[in-house]
Image (cartoon, rainbow, N blue to C red):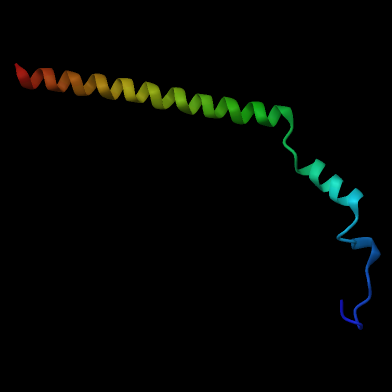
Length: 67
């Protein structure tokens, strides 16, 4: 720290209480985790449905070509 700079004790970077509070504030709540999980599950379901529908269309097109 420079000599002409005063130490600001209100903004102490080594204050353990402030660090613990900041870490607590940064955590995700249980509801947020649930919503992220449901969103991922929904995305997987949509991708699976699109893959099945797309595969069915591909098979239908191939069967028309064989006839």
